[in-house]
Length: 245
Image 1 (cartoon, rainbow, N blue to C red):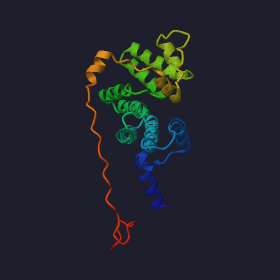
Image 2: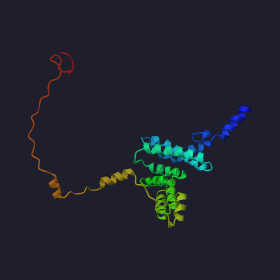
Image 3: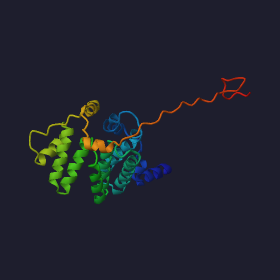
Image 4: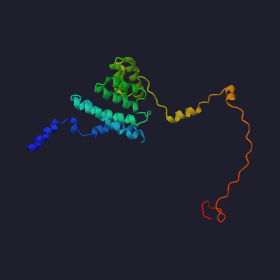
């Protein structure tokens, strides 16, 4: 009985993260499937690292739930940021989901009170085409908080064009003074059609003056006498290059 009480006291004295399982809960696994894995496509050198993005999102959500316990929240934010940094250091610069990773890293930094670093991450996200309505909502909220209403509306508008069914973006668009009807959604052009359009574009004509200047006269080459190939093999076996005599 005494040992049981000591164990119970130790558990209650330990921080929540020390007893909370690191592995995803069923709800977190479902979230990762919807927000990460279902969008990855074929496994390649970028997508193979995206389970770290899932872990970052899980611990960012856990940090929001732990806001009443600063040490617990900060631990979870640290885990989230480490996973976001892993993705950013192991994926290529042009990888489509990097913008979202920057947005969520910015959210984590913001919760830690590192506002300047959070602003830098939000700005990095704008270098990419952000693929998630949640990320556009975060960008709109960020610009509202720094009193840049025009930029906030721009983010909400761009998000709605790409995600016209998002209720969160619709609400932000209206609250920020966006005019109805809602912005026309973007219809992504299939990659095959885009490549075909490139092939159909006529080449740019080169002026004759430039063409003549760029094409010096070249004298014809003198005919070259054919050279007989050396015989192969040996006198006793002419068909075997490496056979002994």
